[in-house]
Length: 264
Image (cartoon, rainbow, N blue to C red; front, side, top):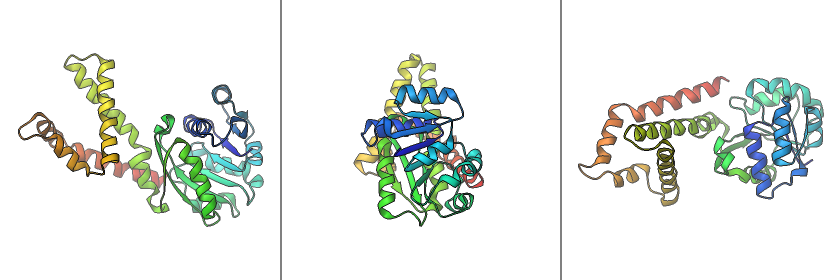
């Protein structure tokens, strides 16, 4: 097998679905393991991959191995598989807080490790993933991993010390955006709009605004100023957001998120 997954949850499924859709791997080149039969059945049915409950089998048969379990299970999973992970395999991790040094210690030998942090928009092919690698990984191997990660969104290689920042600015931030969309829709419903329509208006506004930042290259503050006519409705809304601590709340939430990531 070319690509293996230990853990077949939502993020793993998003990665597998992306690489299959983009022709990077065929379903028959992918194998996944999970302790939950329901997750395996879903992966086999929806993606057509091979599945097993045996983590060691996946580790043995894969050229590239993705550890897509929750952070608290990493130590136990690595203990299960380290004897069958050799110097030719590339291990990709997606767990916050688990540093390259910590991972290397748990494998108890030199292993090629690429630490990554994707986010849930990968489910719709619009994720962004940060990646960093240990010294065992060559530039060519890192680029190969990045080509896999591009199957479900954008990729940026960063220094490892920024990985906890990535958790706060992209890994966890979809939750902040979903909360904002929900609040915007609630307010529209309070003013008489049907809920489904309110979600569409709020979601499209967020999507379009993000595209403006990415595609125009303009500073977000400049784009905000373009909407705020003198004495108009938008600047009045901005005034209230500032009064209620909108930006400060985001700032403090992200600082807390990064701190939690470092402690995991």
